Image (cartoon, rainbow, N blue to C red):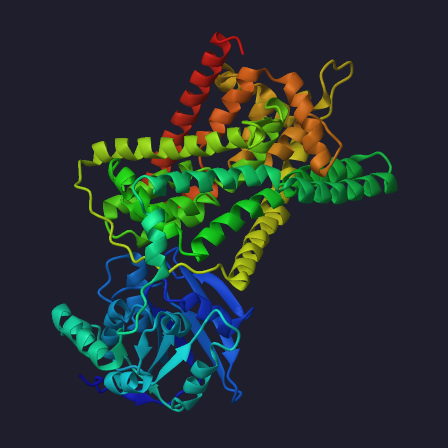
Length: 630
């Protein structure tokens, strides 16, 4: 089965290398190893699928561009991710440079699954190199691969790589330098892939494996022994619940010291600025508007990074696909696939990547349901609001003989309230869209391994940059705007209320209070809800501005907590917590929903049903709390 004859033309630009492979083959780790910090992330034109491109220089001094394509099991696309990969490789995307060569990355311990994609790409006739990744793991297991024989069978260079180790990419760089640099090969039509039946491709895979790979010394996979416990029908769910509980306990317990350090720094800056300037509008803007607002949000960075630390560790060690498998039956009962677990888990960070991750779900109906419920997962932007209200109304004490922190327990309950509500909404949507038989989850379970510190550090750094960028742009702009609305016009002569009461923000808050009074929200809370539509974490800074506080950073949070504990009733606090469990989604998420679904209708439906849920939940919570004498 030789390569298809294709025309060539002279190359006058930097060659573009496309990295292609199955999910969990180490492709992205190899991309990071090749490019380091020389990479940029954007979206493909017309869709919100991530496009990662970088550059590197080979040992011979040749410059390359490299594109990390979405993971795919086949070029016979069944998901939007695979469709993007197919179109890029085939040169079908307008305005997108077609790759000059393909580096197909395969998992050396799972060639039986990975080689199908290799054979499909080979039919396009593009220059190819096979990167035999994770060879260290294969060697430890006793799997013997004859790389030279495999290269002859496939008709392409085969190199061994270990993407997670320094120098693990050297053999690949040498192979790229040996490829012709003076000609560009145009890919054969994609119809060349479908010209060969899948059954014939699988027979060819088996033939190549029999000729090139020996499993005689395979000692078995330690992961299988671990899975006897992790995937046990009783022990597995208990372990999953315990891990999630540990995460939310750590968010409160571990973050205390770094939060104090950040708050101390912001407070010192606020005191210095206040001491250097006289009373006036500019001082009020800098101290109360900018430092008071931005500092109050910045202090929650440690809690967000701790949450992401656990998510990244569980993902990198290979546990998350197991969690999807464990939850498949439960999620199937409400009309979802276990594959929806990963997008929903991503939504704990932010609903935007969660909505985008749903494109990996093959069934269009399951994909739409997952998108519609993803914002019900408790995103990190809710965390500052939860932390403030919990600190004000829930005692910071240990229960269960010191094993459990009461505040962490309440946070755990709030997160699971979002999960259970999402399952309920999915069940309702399933009934409206028509019953659909549950499709069993077919998922590749990667081998367990220790998390790689480099990948973990890069993931946390990326999340920190995203959070700090929001603090320095969206949140900063909203705090300045809110300060202006809260400061002008000033209080009239003989005013008996605080100055903010007579401001534009005060007028707006009193108007909204007519709608929200039945659920216990006063005009101060209503003012904080408005900027929360753009970024939920702004609510803490907004409340600080509303209550005319001059402190900054954690001092704002610790000062605001006793003030709201005195100003609000317990029913109001519980009602606001219920509101944020279901709070209508931020504008940025609604925009992504419109792009992912191709219709503004679903964005409006999402905003409408979430507002209705939030209002109903808050109303019930408020009235029940009053009836119980809270």
